[in-house]
Amino acid sequence: MNLSLYKQMMKVNIKGVMNYAIGAAFYILIVVWIYPSMEKTAKPLNDLLKVMPAGMTKAFNLQNGFGSFESFMSGEFYGVLFTLIVSIFCVTVPIQLMAKLVNQGSMAYLLSTPTTRGKVAFTQASVFITGLFLISAITTIFGIVGVRIFADDTSSFHVERFIQLNVAAFALFFALGGISFLVSSLSNDEKKGLGISGMIIFGFFSLDFIRKISDKVDWLKNFTLFTLYKPSEVVVGKGNLIQDCVILFAIGLIAFIISILTFKKRDLPL
Image (cartoon, rainbow, N blue to C red; front, side, top):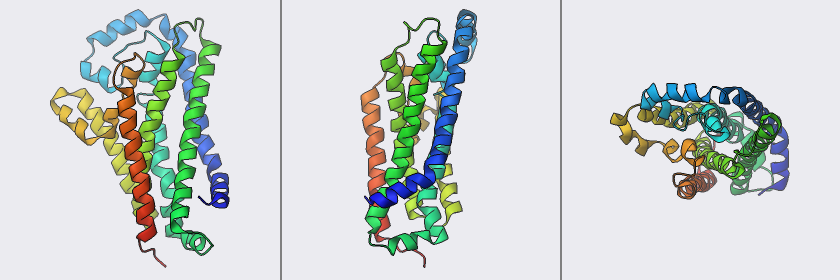
C-alpha cells in the first residue's frame, strides 16, 4: 500500500463517505424512533400482513412482522432503504477511485511517481473498503444508541443479532463493491464503467426482488448475490449466516485480487 496516496484519497473522499454514513444513520434513527408507536398497533399490522400475498411480504423482508425492533428494522430499513443507499455507494465510489482517474489522465500522473500499479490499485481498494466499513460501523452504532434513547423497553432488543445483521450487510456490499471495483479497474471511460456497474448491482437487486414475489421464478436466485443476504432470517437466528458471509467475503476478495492483477497488466490510454 502507498500510505501517502491512501491518506490523500481518504481526505478527498471522506466527505462523500460521511454523507452516505450520516444519511444511513439519520434514516435508521427515524425507523427506530417510529417503532414504539408502531408497536402499539403491531397486532392489526401483523394481521394485515397475513392476508397479503406471501411474495410481497417476502420481497420487503416482512415475514417476521413487527414483533421486535430487529424484525421491524430488517424489513423497513435493511430490506430496501439501506440496501439502496449502500448499493449506490458501491456503484459510484469504485468508479471515482479508478476509472475516473484513468479517464481524466490523473492515473498517468500517479503512476509517474515512485510507485507501482499494484500498490495504486491496492491502495484505492483499501480506500473503498475503509469507506464501506465506516458506513456500516456508524449505522450500527446509531442503531444501537437510537434504541437505547427511543425505546421504552430495551429488554427485547438483541444487540448481538443486530450486529450480525450489519455484518451480513457489510459482507454483501463487500462482494458487490469488489465486482464494481473490478469493472472500474478495466474501464477507461467513467460513464461506461458507471453504467456497467449500475447494471450489474441493480440487476442483482431486481432479480432478487422478482424471484421473491413469485415462486415460479425462484431459479433466479442462482443469478444474484442478494440471495445470500437474508436480513429477516438473521434477526430471528435462522439461516446460515456464517456460510453466506464467507461466500460473500470470498467473492469480494477474489474480485479485488483480480482487479489488482488485471490493472497491473492492462494498457492505459495516453
